[in-house]
Image (spheres, helix red, strand yellow):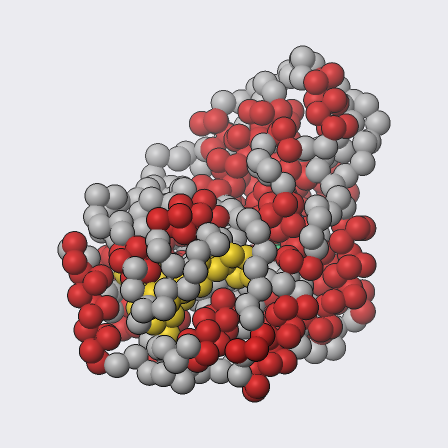
Amino acid sequence: MPSATIRSATIPHDLHADYVRDQLVPRTVDVNGKTYFPEGEYVLYWMQSTQRLDENWGLRAAIRTADRVNRPLVIHQGLDPSYPYAADRHHTFILQGARDTARDAGARGLYYQFVLRPGRDDDRRVVDRLAARAYVVITDLFPTAGIRERVERFAARVPCRVLAIDSVCTVPSGAFEKPEYAARTIRPKIAKLLDHSIEPVAEALPRVPVSEALRASLRATVSEHGLSLCPIATMSDADIAAAVHSCDIDHTVPAVPLVGGSAAAAERLAAFVSRELMPYADRRNEASVSDGTSRLSPYLHFGQIAPARVVRDARASGASPESLDAFVQQATTWRELAYNWCLRTRNFDRLEALPAWIQKTMAEHVGDPRPVLYDLHTLESAQTHDALWNASQRELVAHGVIHNYPRMLWGKTMLLWTPDYEQARAHLFYLNDKYALDGRDPNSVGGIMWCLGLWDRPWGNKPIWGGIRPMVTSRAKLKFDVAGYIRRVGRSPSATAAPGLLL
Ligand SMILES: Cc1cc2nc3c(=O)[nH]c(=O)nc-3n(C[C@H](O)[C@H](O)[C@H](O)COP(=O)(O)OP(=O)(O)OC[C@H]3O[C@@H](n4cnc5c(N)ncnc54)[C@H](O)[C@@H]3O)c2cc1C
């Protein structure tokens, strides 16, 4: 997608610093190259992957544009049953997040509307009709979870300009114009821009209010073919559960106790920086405890907390330099490397995207005998011979996350138990994205492709592994308390199986 910039002459003076920062490290992509629609009644911000109002660069750009052209701002979010792996787990987390956003918008005087599309046959063109009346549509830039493709199809259909803006990365993706090949290549570039990128920016409100007449006509536009605005701000947990139940989605992957939304994300961050960050350097690989890492990844995936805030608050915590550095490396270097890979690589989740040395070693070792093979059902229901692997799979199914250390072993082990590398890749994406609350993320791609050798160097030449770095569960006890981890996952009150799964 080509890059685009917004003309500076029209930016109000008080937002100029904000605007200049945006342009120094561009976040904006012009998706369709179309013109603004002069008769447009409002600026439309279509919230997708950045499910928050704070430090939301798409929303900031939408407010600036609305003020510049003297139009009101409409924030629209929808939830469809048709995204990949749509299930109670993800739907509940998104609805809880939307409830926070709606309440937050109400408190700030922003106009925010939410539309739930329960059935696959229900009206799928609400946002098209909203766009037909818009001066410009601004949305989120996100390369995975089907969002990039959805935005490209939408942008081709609608008459006005569509801009996609990156709020995912701390240092915006536009700062790295080329593919980065390893942590060591992106790390120094991030280091140069990080201080600047995490400075707090004053949030503005749009000048032109949304009139009662516009509210009524938006309601009418939404309900033209049977849907209606969802009263999400006032919904109770029971209402959300009932709404999820009414949707044509996979009901075998249940919601988890972890609550979605910007309020819960802020609480998790506060608890992490005040207590858990201090020993992070020593405890982050200790999978037998649940509080060794931040557990922020579901919130970061759904954009319910700003990554800049995470880094800023971590820096202000007074944690030791070792813990702070270890955490910031995860939250910036590895996260942004994954995002860069997905944004800049064709077929980023396919074997063919991997570097030439991996292709070569795979071709040499694809015929190696695999003494142990498991089918997908055995893997999914955690019935292998390996207690540690089964515990990781149980953690994924029951909690919607896996601790990072067992997650590496979980991913690497799949290479040993499948007939070829393609099957390993496909099973990993299926299991990760179906169950993980942080799944379908650039980090999902990064983590799984790393198991297949991405961003690594050749490591000798072993059967099945070839030159890919081997990692085996039998050596895990050197790294963490394996028995303690298995006990922790087993004794969790939420460690119940999805219907149909024997755990
Ligand atoms: C096979 C495999 C699959 C993975 N799938 C996902 C996934 O679907 N979604 C996901 O967010 N992460 C994924 N990861 C990366 C990592 O496991 C998680 O980000 C991490 O465990 C989240 O826990 P946390 O928030 O407590 O991390 P913390 O250690 O507290 O780190 C803070 C944040 O830094 C980022 N981060 C941490 N580790 C990594 C990493 N290795 N790569 C990139 N970013 C990182 C995450 O955004 C994380 O929330 C995967 C890793 C592997 C090996």
